[in-house]
Image 1 (cartoon, helix red, strand yellow):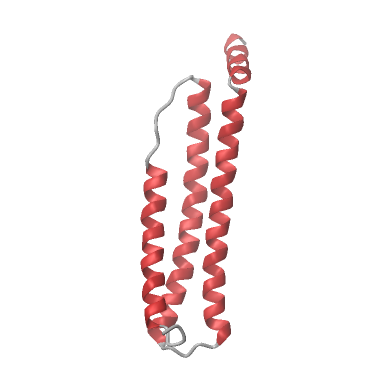
Image 2: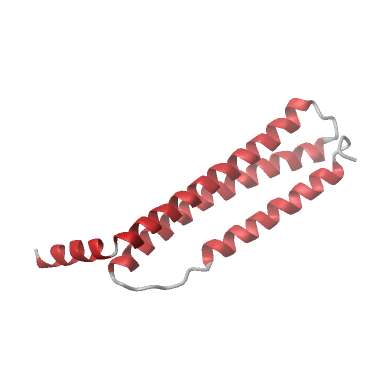
Length: 127
């Protein structure tokens, strides 16, 4: 019973940090939803416009949509893990900087950007 009371007091002591952790988690979730939405939109626009640029451009559009969905799912998974780890660190009054989530997002956004550039360069309607 003592350890439960200790955790409860510690959580109240760091309520501001817990709330900030939740806001950060929700910001990552909103970002993931936006990235997935942009990918679906880009792919859907490509095929609804009826663009006849070729099979390779169609594959790039599908790859772009799939990559954004993959990034969104990855963001949701890693932000959840980050939220849980941060919660435990707050409860223990510890702090360890996290670089993996930012690095992963940066790499995947770079890949998506490169695919987008190739798509735009190969698309007949843009050039």
